[in-house]
Length: 264
Image (cartoon, rainbow, N blue to C red; front, side, top):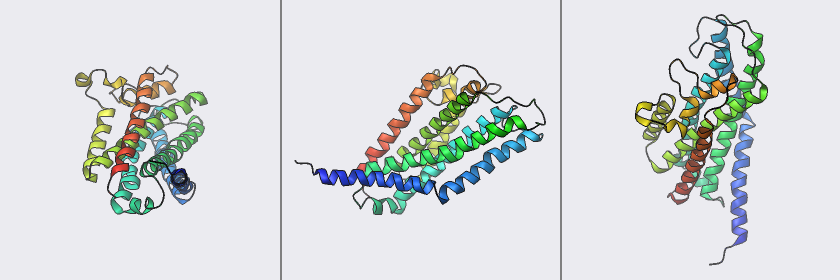
């Protein structure tokens, strides 16, 4: 059967159009809202924990910052993926969009990509870099003023956190493509997050090598691998970085393939 190259070209352009449209929304009101919200949530709360006696996220400035980014952004990824990807499918917005010459798989990938890029910028990199600037300049209440790590190392740590967020975005999207009930999707995704942060290693053995657990495991009295890296130690969980990327790509591919076959 002959392939209509003109139709394929229109469909590919349609997918690119969805991606450009979603990114433009992040450059507009949506992005501004998220940026203000995350600056207040991350930097505002971090400043409060640094200059007062309340320190729920760690004992050092950059440790607290990394803990807050990992916890808040992963949870936000689950909620926003449900709202912007799964919610549009359930509400019929996706049906209206792909009634145009936009491939379903391309639509799903464009939505996931724009969400990851938008959240990475507004919730991780900008708040993180703002904190990187002001943390060494304030007088803390209960610890010595931390020295800022090398900027390249800090940016690499933010990228690792962004990859962990991508894992939860794509996981939630994949679950939402195969499970009809949003509550069940949220429950499974949140349960996975809990196991990632506090895994039963006596049962799972070395699974932390192949999951984000190796990067953000929050064992009592120990730093996460990404926090260790910020403070100058080698990143001993490079395999976890690789497998987190592989898992995110696999979940995104699975979601796109299932989405391609859904009755909308």
